[in-house]
Each structure stands twice: as structure tokens, then as C-alpha cells.
Length: 516
Image 1 (cartoon, helix red, strand yellow):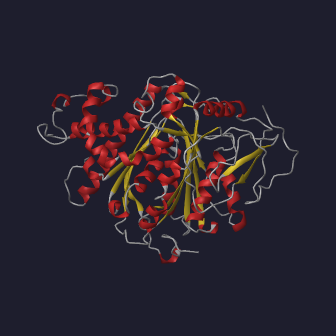
Image 2 (spheres, rainbow, N blue to C red; image 1 turned 90 degrees about the horizontal axis):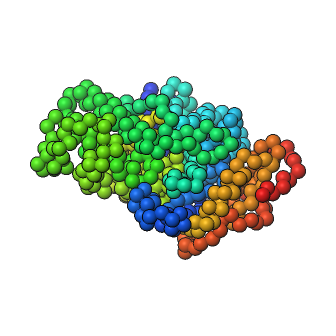
Image 3 (tube, rainbow, N blue to C red; image 1 turned 180 degrees about the vertical axis):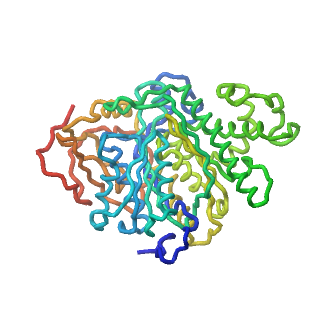
């Protein structure tokens, strides 16, 4: 078994583990997508409404074969396999999700099936829920554990996963699905900068899910945008104050600005909002600057906005247009590349911002990102948000931790391109099937499993007591990059359980009938 960064004996570590952060990262995306241009045509909306207005080209989605448990099972097992890790090397497992299928039993306890053969049951952590922020809260829990007196020298694993679906209508194109699993420990190539987190939390009903019998949320679209942008303002202000305090203790009186971030990634409900968010941060820099140069440089021609009040500009088109233009070059350099997964797969909820982080890494070489500071903004409705920063290690030599991380994500574009395109009509059929069978018991899923990616966990049945059983498709080292085709993923086929993994220890019950 290869030794990963952070696997040194606890006795050899100092009183405070060094460079705690993300060592490895694994991304799981559904094997099918719907094209947003075709969806525009199917929905009868103006051309460009989804592709230009939202900035979305494709949207990944799940059939009734996948649920939150299967997504997280797949992501965690792939993380462990790709990095050659044993399950007894993990001492904490955290889950962040807002996809709730049981009001008591956690996703984390389902994931413990993966640990059975190792005999390791000494694994702390549990699920964390608050809309799209749960993954970040879970990650903070893991980092804090490694930096605490409770740490026993083992790794932490964090998995954020969700299935984002909406009722038919204007919000449906902002859906998506997926999971991101992260290995956390010391000596990480992506180290959290200590003391540099700006958090804002506040009560609002901008997006919530009060109907536990439905997957669909209740959304106040305008309020949700206002909450997101106001949280961004507040978090940036707190972050700036904290880094200024650090710099002052070090004897520096420099002023922090966006230029001090090499890259910025954001929670991405849709790509256009991310572009507006970077423009929003430039507005903050402009208003906070004691004497901005409006004759040359990035603030050229912005003098008319010198006295605007941020809280009055959330929907000010003139301000938005001016700062989108002013920040366009910065967006191309610092943020655009991070939107690969968001543009091609949609909003994954809790893993969204970490899909953006994965995209950033996948689209750069280790030499390009070595030593750089990455700003990360995470937002969850209700609402909770944090802006924090990661410092990338300087070491990008072949075989280094950073080199391994970048190499592990180098096939991300291939994975996206290897998915199957599904017609809008077939997509709608799948959404209707999910709606009609959500929380149904007993139930046997009817969708095909033959087109799932190798090594994908999937739902085989739900018994009359709502107990869920899963199987795994045969693992494969290589991805097949077949030409894009159109198919119906919801075609019914006879299910044959996979022998690749033993089934959960659930008492045998009669086979449930297929539900209509």
C-alpha cells in the first residue's frame, strides 16, 4: 500500500499538524445529461435563455437507479481505490448533503458498508445539512478534527453529494447531480490558511424543502439572489478584516484586494451568477478603496458609482453591467476555468463549489497553480456562507502530492465527454418517474443500469419497510470515450444483482413488485 501525504505516525508529528487540507479529490457525475439548447426548444423558451441567460450548456441527472446513498458510495469507494488507501486508515467520515431520504438514518451509516471488510468501525463523523453549505461544514469539521487534540493520526474523508431536481418550469434547467469525495490530512497540497474564514449566517426563506414527500424545493428566486450576493459582501468584508489583522501582526500595512487571490471559485447555482459574483467583489474593492484610479486600470470609467450603497445594488442593471465589464479580464484569468463542471453538469448543491475546485485543478498544470492562493466562496440557502482560502503547495515536482492530485483529475474532460446525451422528452420521463416513485415502498427501480459508469453503485430495491439495497457495476480502470448518442435512460430491463460487492446485511424479504 502506497504511503500518502499525511500518513506519518502521529508520534512523529509536532503539536500542530502542518498544512492541513485536501490531499486527494474524487468527483462522481451521472452518466447521462440533457442538452440545454435542446431543452430550450422543448420548453418553447427563447433561444439562449438557458445557455446564455444562465450560462448552462448541459445538465446531468439521475434515473430512479441512483439516490444520495449510491452517489456517495460511488464517490468514496472511487477515492479509496484511486489512491490505494485501506479503510482502516480513515478515522473520520463526514457527509454533507441536503438530499434527505430518511429523517433518522444518516448517509454516513450507509457508507459504513464499505468499511466492513476492514473491520474498522472506529470512524467518527456524521451527516451535516444546510442546503448547499453542508459540504463545506463537513469539510471544516474534518479539518478541525485533524487540527484538534482528538486527532489520532488517521485520515478524514469528506463526501458532499446531492441530486438537484425541480418541478417542471423555469427552475428545472438549474438542476444537476453528483458527489465529491475529499481526503483530508496534514502535509496536503491544498492547505487551508489558518484563521482566514469569513462567515455570515442569517435567517431567510429563500430556498427550502418543507415537503418531505417531495424532492422539489420551494424557491423565492429574487430573494435567493439577494441573499447570495449579500452573504458574499459580508463574507468578503470579514475575510478582509482577518487577513489585514494577520498582516498587521506581521508588520505589513498592505491593503487586501482581489488581486491577492490567484484564483476564485464560487458555489455555482448557474454559471452566470458566478460571473456576477466576481463583478460584485470588484464593486466591493472599488467602494472600499480610499482613492481608486478611475482614469486608468480596472476602475476606469467607474467614477459614477463611487457613492452607491451595496445593499441597494443587488438588482441595479447599470452597476451590474459596468462591473461585469470591468471584471471581465479578471474573470477569464481567475474564475472561468473553474466552471467546467458547472457548465457541463449543472448545480450539484453541496458539491457544487468543490466541482468548481476540481475543474480549476483539472484545467491547469501543477506548475501553474503551485504556491497560489485560491479563494473559495460557499453558500447555502436559509442561509449560511463562508469565504475561505486555500494555499497550494510550492512543490510540483513529478510524483509530488500536487502532481498526483492534478494527474488524478486530468481525465475530467474525458469523463464529461463520455456521458450519454438523452433527449429532453426522455429526460422529462425520468423526472416524472422520480416524482411518482419518490419515497415509494416497496419498490424496484425500472431504469437501465447498463449505461452506468464502471464502478457505480445503484439502487436495486426498496423493501416494504423502506430498507434500501444496493449493488455495484463492475469496476474498470479506463473510461470509454464513445461518440455521443441519444437514448432513453428510463428503459425498463431485468435486473441482475452485481456480484462485485456483497449486499448489505438486511433480513431477506419477498421480492417487491415493480411499481407503475
